[in-house]
Amino acid sequence: MRYLEIRRHTMRTIPGKHLSQPGVALARALGGGVGPFARVVTSPLPRAIETAIAMGFAVDQRLDHLKRIDAGVEEEANWWDGFAAFSRAVRRGDVTARYAGRLAGRWRRLAATLAEETAMLIISHGGIIEAGCVGCLPDADHAAWGRALDYCEGVRLAFDGTAFTGAELLRLRDHDPIDQRITVTAR
Image (cartoon, rainbow, N blue to C red; front, side, top):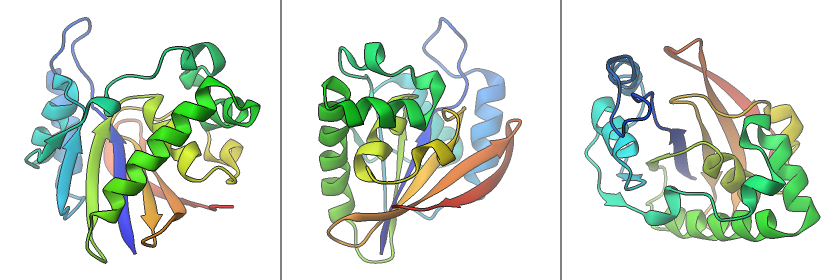
């Protein structure tokens, strides 16, 4: 099995582009308890790159498809409504379905580059992760996956060399860096 651990960036100083001190502290505390990772990939936006570095990982690659949701997706699915909103939008078969399918294909290609029993860390943004995970596991009970991902939360996708076979939600308790791992079913 190969794994993609896809996490949302940590807190930043809004409207600024860079992490806040509490965001650095959260990422630093979380980073000590995750990994190892064969590769680290982020969006090219500073908050994603800085999150990986604050976690203690050098960035191997920055990918544009991890930085922004495609036009029209936010009209079909409000990412604050969580995984179920993206699942409903994907089932309708319009813009969100195409977007989630493209993300799933890109993530499948990334996972296929990994050696057996290794993992890749991906740092991206809210909405992108939810849409991509729905695309990777379209038949899962996404309503059971719950709310949108908060800062530094994510999903660990299992990949068997051909397809994604399962997911584990990586939730934090009130910005506590201790993961609450929740196994969810792929079907």
